[in-house]
Length: 339
Ligand code: 13P
Image 1 (tube, rainbow, N blue to C red):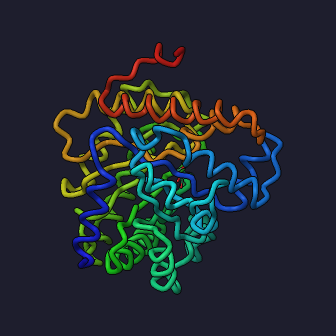
Image 2: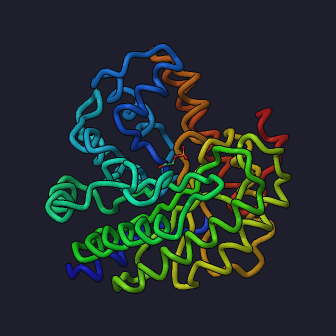
Image 3: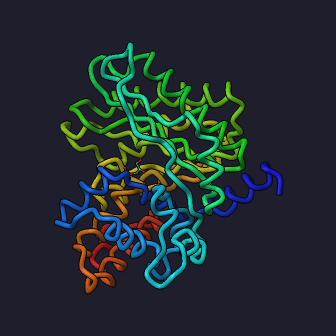
């Protein structure tokens, strides 16, 4: 199959009008933090048990079309045999892989960060593809402060995202492009809107410069929200601000915008997605999710590392996946949380 047909097919398998993406690609330090909160050791076996629990949830494929895995998970097997990427496929969930190597300071731009991992990326991608990955994810992070992100920070991060996406497409792997403006701080929603718009403009200019086909990528941005230390915004306000920024900065050729949850509570992330989809009018893209914490947290707290809690944890995951699927149609109601 040609690279073009591979990209097209993967987009078709991942993008529809009711499903979203599960991010289960926490790096070792991040999963260790999540496990510590429930007093579970981050051993290879526990990580495999947790991710296998997520992927073997019966019916998950009704609401989830793709799963982002961490490198280690690509090579792991579920308890009863098949490799975890195969377990995903059996549920009609496309397996993908996080390929960035985390952030570090950006020299010349104090306070800004830049993500590592471009060296040798092509070779790594070929290996991941051979092990079943059909799409990749790369995250750039933008902390908001008085002087950040700087112009240099925005441009350097955009350049890296574009180079990553171009390598992916060249090898027939759909890139998820994730520029995340962080929620940390006391900035208001207007400041988040300004920064997110500037960031997305820089990202799409760079993607265009590097000849990335917008039709064959997925954008994973933050919603436009006030900083965690600022007052909470109403869902209508979040929806209006988010859609305004997306309309101004995201080309209509992009098939799907899959928001990250970024530290919103699980229900909050569903309420906001619902408001966005109620207000979207004739938006040209699907407005979906690629949630990590907002899908996993309730399940993780139901599990607590105990085999006897497996079923309850899977039910908790399925519930969040189902409610977010309803929110994709603007049909979610907080009263549904009781069932
Ligand atoms: P959250 O939804 O927890 O922000 O995670 C999504 C993700 O993949 C971050 O890179």
